[in-house]
Image 1 (cartoon, rainbow, N blue to C red):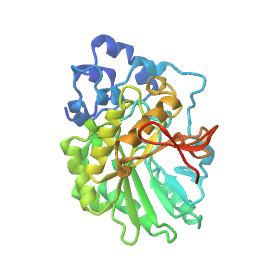
Image 2 (image 1 turned 90 degrees about the vertical axis):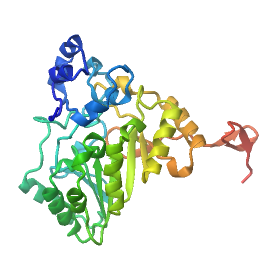
Image 3 (image 1 turned 180 degrees about the horizontal axis):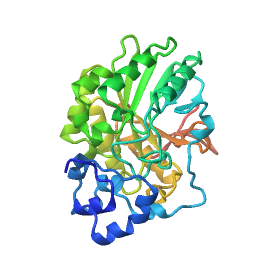
Image 4 (image 1 turned 135 degrees about the horizontal axis):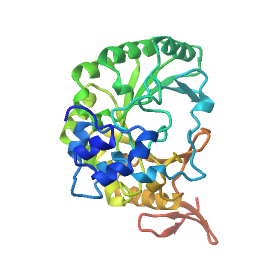
Length: 345
């Protein structure tokens, strides 16, 4: 295989679904983008119905089930878009979405109604110029977060030009790239591409979306090392997903593996209310219990922030249950022993 798998028939030919399953996926393929890189397809265990990589990327008929609380734009990108390609939700930072395609399409993606071939649009040179002009016009913005789509879909030449253009805006101090590429197609993280991300005088971060330790293949570890060795601070974003990482042992293995590979766990997202993703969601109470158990299991260095994006794009909400508890006897603190300990401070 050399090209991404983008149709149910291609998934069948690769042995990822049966003929009957491929037929049932036709409506899903008409509605949502499908793409699985050959690399990721090779990482899937065809004999394991619970394979976490397959669950994240192989489409399911359940994606056609939409509930009343699900939203096409669950975190309110559109309401905070002053010009095409920009999301300005917080006063000191903006999202810049230069591309609307990805190397792979996660089946739980909160932007699934906005990305994919024929769905989203990569910014034209004129549109990108307007987006950069908007950033320059906002003196309070100090950080640009590149997302999409996956901005690592850019060629090294285009990534270098975009990095330079952002770095030339005087008030920008931080450039942050969000990507799935080290997991999806690690060979694209070439020395040339890594070099293209450098911006002397600016802090450049790379945030890697990863949800399960199985995604840290040797090739992915190599791509991560190339980025870390080049001096980029690496952080992670993970989504809490039913059937993928909703067990404390799995979460602990993931977070500890990230730290061991120089990736600081940053966010653990409660799944957004994206259309057709109900089969991935678990309750907030279940998420809080898992997160508390994770905090009791690993060092603080391996604990991300557990958050929920408030629908409509207001902000993120801290989803962790507090360890400070008010009881009839007064204030108490929950310990890792599961007991409440009186505290008078």
